Amino acid sequence: MIPTMCMVQAGQVPADLQAQLREDMEGFSQRSFGAPPAISWIEVPERSGFTAGVPSTSILVSMQSSEPLESPRRIELLKELCDIWIERTGKSINEVVGVISDPKN
Image 1: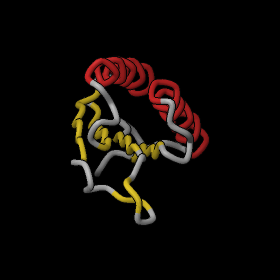
Image 2: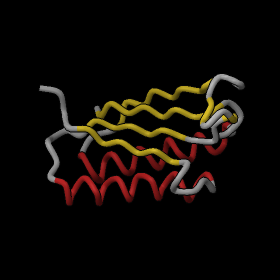
Image 3: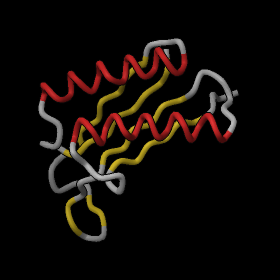
Image 4: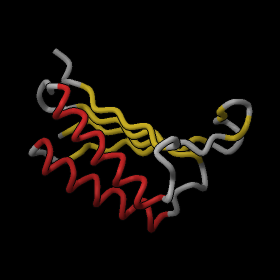
């Protein structure tokens, strides 16, 4: 299992879109790491997330790779991961924060 965290603002991702994103993340994780994601879906309550003093519109997606990644491969995977979320949510690249970390020793 690939540890995965998806943090969104309340009301940002309706249930049907969440289901689609979970499917997308399943496919991405299987293709990229050869294992399914263990998704922790976190919804930040309204009026609890702010950017520059206004309610945040950002989404954070974080995954832990199954093996250490060289920079070119990490960049490729991050682009694909962020593109999935941008396409599904209509957010801009400035609103989607993607992280793919190396496994813990």
